[in-house]
Image (cartoon, rainbow, N blue to C red; front, side):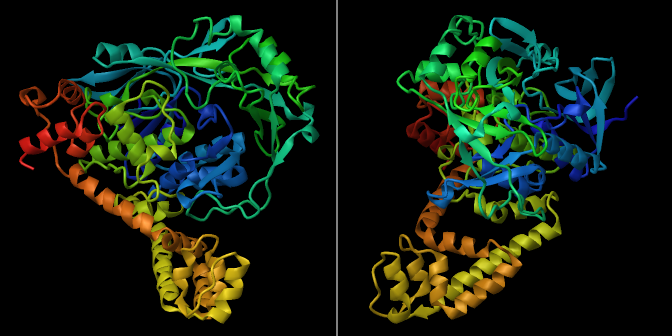
Length: 623
């Protein structure tokens, strides 16, 4: 018989790994239950981490003391910083990863964590007593008691795989679905729904002609995700790009009558921003080609992930159409693409800690909450693991605000607005994205991670060096002047207006096309200081440039955030009777009664609640 645990984590995907690792690092006893010990941290879809907004989330996870950034660095085969042609709020790190190494590194990290125990089994149901979860029951009849439970079931809850007109029960290819939990939760009063996602075929890289494709190299000077001691890549694996064409589209259309997307077999909603190839050619009929990213699955394997060709069409249709893509004429398929439907629970049923409102000590994280993507799942797992552990220890909840992190935006969106389609993070979802950059995740969150005991003293010291060094260099640039004869040759070469008198170096950085490296050439004192500081922390120079160049925007956004945060401090009583407030609109009354927001700030973000409704609430609360 297994002992009683502080935290049981059900599922060992990205959310489950982060939840188990965090809770154990915080001193809780953790049992991680997975249906297959050999698929811990499996990259079920693409072999990559990060990307636009998602890369910011991985940096945030790392800054708080989570594991995804470290594992991504250790298993990376390519690194790219996306959107460098845009402002720093849009810069987004992304790694191409070795799928097998990624899973191995996560398992090793968990095995090195003495607070994590493992159990291979399927959880059939929860043990609930007096409105509180107290453990789980497994398929082989085990009952394991715990103080809290975190469900991270991914796509496994009543998972149904679609391939043409064929249907198979499964959580992903080759693995069985999980049954029992949805039915029990619905019986307990939870609302459940169905969502859909899909994956493309995998092919044999030896059968492709890369000479017909565009090569996509990694960055010349690659960075990394983790703020810790992982090393940037010294060698990288190239990816490639090719395109579909009208012939491919016509061949795919031949199978539309057998497509579960179009014949009614799939009734649930898929991810809007990651559509299947048949959905693309149907919705964008005017386009004669779509981009295909040819992504290697690792250093040693020949398996290739055909990104952009997600499909659930019959396998023979997939094969025939794919061989009409340039470079794929002789492609050999390892396995076809497929779609999968699975159960989820609308996240408006959760608190900001990711604990359910209906059952005490029960937490949901990942795709069970209606999200899509490894990064979105991982950050939810981290926050659920932290809060489960803190509740066991009777400590205050750990909640990030929208102005502190993309993680705060994601969770607030889910809890306040809910989602009827797979939720994916975008920079446009964050109203404070100039504050929530990938380059300052450590400055924003490492002190918070250290305060709760998840990041160590070394991480805090490294962050403080960066903070202090940046302030020192900014001060030097604001103090040191440059005369026209020194500055003008450099300014002219950059097509920037010449100066007529001595100016401070910091005043030149805000100019378009002028960068800190240009300015440092003009000032011997600040240049020497920059070199000295960079020896302590490589990010100091770039951080200084961003803070100086965008200072006006940053200050303005901070002011707005502070004003909005005042509303976050106005608490709403848990027993608030909205129906007694006659001046509230009918829609506001209905939605606020269901969602029960904790603060005025949260209430203001509920769809259908108007500024006048907020005014009524503030008056009622005496504010």
